[in-house]
Length: 297
Length: 297
Image (spheres, rainbow over the protein chains, first blue to last red):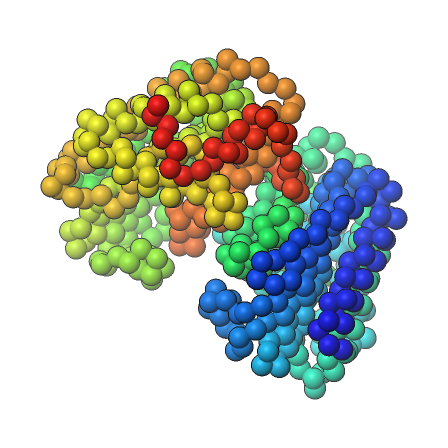
């Protein structure tokens, strides 16, 4: 597959995911917002707000190319003069405090030197961690990974633990998932298989999220759960703006701000020294925002 | 004055500002939260929530010292092995959308090499810019600056324009104010006079803010103004987490997270491609989030 074909497929993946999310959330209608990137390429950001399940959601496609800028050279250490990148990126913020925030991204990168690689992942940020639901989520990811390589799940699960970590809070962002970058080892998978792996992750995304949403919506909630949800959304903002390398690189390299920051939540709250009660579900959640938890069980 | 005396005065300044803010906002009670810094020193963070005027506010004092870490050496390019730093830092987030967010900071820094400097400033972030109020604010700052040096206001006003700027939004954070760092030119002011200047800024802070609060509270507001306020608070978060050098340095160097992030607002909101109406007060505000505006008139 060449880069143009991969980009075309990425766009189809975006449309298919949007179609399925609109079936899942009958009140969610995604609007298309296309844009052109001055240096080459562009994207189509599709967003929704105030659905039945989704308070805010974005499914972004982009296909960008052009000269490797000095910012890219410094930050990504690229050996090439011209690059091509395409991908699909999703963040969904639900209303219901027991339905988790979810993030998915798959991406393809190519240099004029001939070098290429894939990256991607799915990770889950529950406002309230429910062990059983986290386990269902991780088992879904493992099943997909296992079809391609028996080592992928463990390797990419640990990578997600390390990546989605907030040092200044000493917390992981959520229960993790899988994350991988710069994958091009053709001894493991052919180039087409690598893309197939990314595609399978992305196409499974709607059903993985639908399952989590249905599980979460069985729970009753009140104003206090909403407050906690908004507090946890604050942490999501902190991770994305202070630590997420994708966000930082995007903003610094003159990426399209609105598309990059579509990941930020609707209402978020910061309270000084937020307190939780002993033996509460909030405290249980905090105790599980750690690396290295085996969620498969 | 030696560093211990300066730190003692800083603590008194904190208490005096809190006393006056509690007079201004009869429902605001500040709680003291002292902490110890492992490497040396510590601080006392005083915060309030859900007052009559102030939805959230923090007045922080700190006095920290110890070895110059490698992070400090790299980021601040310090010529010394041991440092001492003390200061007072304030951020207030009001309920009323027509009352501005305000930030004030004064700080003293000293190295074992004998080098020392002062820094500080006050800047205003109105959710809605009202020319007259911004002018009153800047004239107050100019009056204080002029007592010390006729060039200070212009120099430090431009510095604030440059510092409180959000490149990825191409917006200033608000209407600016004054900002200065690394000031120790004893040809301009003696060391005592430099501290006197910082002190005068800080001690004028409550009346400067009281004036702005009273002006803002004359305006009527509804749900739409609240939504805009929350949207603008989102931008405040973006500046602080992505660009503010103080915040970034604090988080990276292992500062006390809760004290550093007391600056973050209560409810903040992000909407994809937030739209404003032609000829609206929101649009007028956006058109004035620019460097180089002369607010004195």
